[in-house]
Image (cartoon, rainbow, N blue to C red; front, side, top):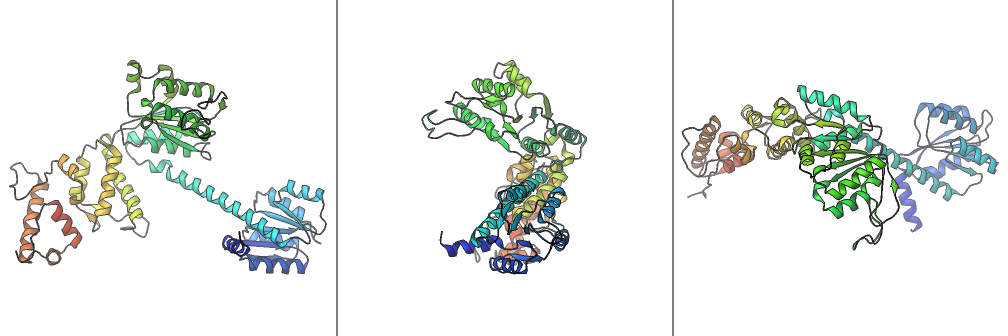
Length: 483
């Protein structure tokens, strides 16, 4: 890499990093201040250990350059105090009296590096950049894990009904254990969300959460995914590959739709649970693994056992603790909370209708909310989430009408989508009556405005986008102006 580009990259990474130089020699302090400032670092100076310790107490630094020998106190003592109180700020020791013994002592106490006066400036700058880059990566990983834990904490499992509160209590109790857990429930009830919450609140949260969709993979590919393979294990195995179990070591592996795996894979999975080891495809070597197993299914595993399609011994190994997620139709009291949660989620993603508190300001009109409360929700929470996401995208004002619902939902709720100029049925619902009135009124105004949708929207005092949505839903045929 050209030298100019290296310097530019280093200046980019140095931006906003603050360094502290503690040294009793003014020439050293001033020289380091000039060198580091030219690289883009913010630099503070201290002329002795006492002043340096005061600065370290007053603010946080990204890195400290610390002289070993100072008149009031040694740099070794300052470093020892820092580490004993848990301060992990990177420290480079600098001295005019270099020796192997002194370097080893400094590193044992917790120094990150050791430089003898006079040092190579380029090497010093490269080492500072390397250490700071490592710290940034570590901080980013910590923040990512914190964000994941927050995203998948128990408060994101929405529910206030008695069944959901009991379920949350159970999830909280089992999260810290090592036990295998079977999560059952219909499609769309949030089984993977519960699995991630268990992992995020367990002692294994710092390690990997690996999800495997058992039902989407053929047997050979599933076994390769789970256990890995060595080069040449099968035709397309051109190199060694780690399996999900090895990746999930010390963490959690989650099997979605566990009931779909075949008999041969069931036997191998049972061995991993019992022996905590497996053999990659094409290999004779066993690999020890410590991965907590969470499994989910929308099938009746007990019935599959009775039918001979699922191993009974594996069933009991998996079903140590069973968490049953209720379908949405059995906890409709949670629908308003879920709607509010998804409104905020998708308003944030679409950068619209977000209030100063960071929450969505959208609300469904009463008749629209009643449709949601009356619906049977065969697709459960996932179906509701899709409906709310659609509503956010189509919403033109803060009170969201029933117009935005998909046709299937309206029809399932007994709201017929009229075609052409067909007459209203005798048993029409209130929603259909309202829609019929809307349709006739909109056509009347459009005819008055010579089919100008812009003028019609002004007369009706609604946004043009809302009028267009209604025209589309009510199947109003727009005539060309002048017809």
